[in-house]
Image 1: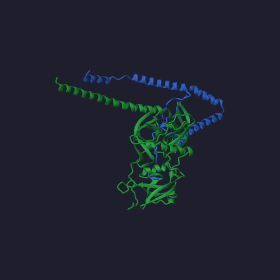
Image 2: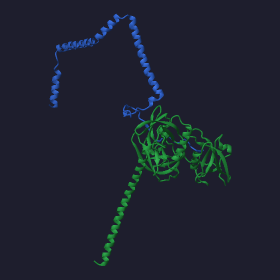
Image 3: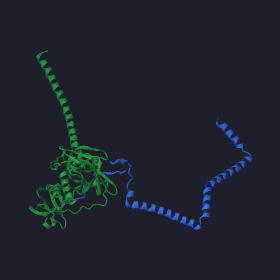
Length: 352
Length: 135
């Protein structure tokens, strides 16, 4: 064998060795990713499952069942409105025992209900920062499906919505593909640190996806329920619409309606004003309006900046309590979602 | 046996009829059986009939009439109350509740109870009725 041939043989053998080792390493990486993910979900589940309880609520006609979780060590529980509806009493299943829980309050508009059990030193799930959530971020849902033991489900954030078909949520909701079985509504959605960042409030597509109310919004309602026994949503009496995409200033938000005997009328806002800021929050789309209004405190004064005839104006609006949501006598169950509505046309005089 | 043989046999049997004494005997036997049956039925109710006859003879007419009236009123009340309870259950909506499967559960105290099957929340209650954005 010549020296050149020997070199070629060694070269081929070396390359074969390198590719074989690299291939095995890649396979190993795939397994490692799966194991790592599975281990992380297990860890989050083990860390939080004790603070997640099964809730039963009772009204005249039926027993309702769902999930809830402790938010402090004094037995305060957060759950979804859909779990208690208009029930008069509730119990939780905690450490194998049925314990009575008082319904402190409930709010249909945000889908939140607050309960209190006479317990001390309960395990609880700390709240994470829901403002940091991003699309494709991982979420772990924990809840009780049917009469089965507590179980986890994993998914990712697929969007942030204020509108579902032709109805608007009270504030931005997190859409995720965490599967939800009957009974799991009201359970927490957890981030990778095991902190609750949202609560499962609304399932869509037969439970294949769900909407979560960000924990910041849930805590804002919970604070009202604790203090007043009911949620107090802010109101200034302004209806707005978004400009059509083909118009100049697309996505800009304009005043389209002013409600009688409201702060908006009193302070001089007019139809056609372009809303550019509420308080410190800049308004770029309707989502910003809903979020700004949701977190506005009743009784406070908020500066609203608008553009009228190319001039910027500021109005100080006093926030009053939003008129009560009028409920139909019987809720349509199962809810038949209406057909998607066409975008509302904007009838405003745009600046030339 | 082929078809021809069968036809021949049937023709032969058609001509074979029993005598008159057979029919007379049959009729007598039938009447005897019928009477026996009637007597057996009557014997079954005879003790009750005797007791009632004796009761009527023993008790004065007024007592018997009063007992009958009380029995009729009680029967009417029972029927009326049954109808009323069915009607009121329909009105209150309880009758509309579908029948749930009975599940025997053991509670913490160890006693058995039959709780109604719950409605597991699916998060289908619409979260907002707002069709426009207003604040």
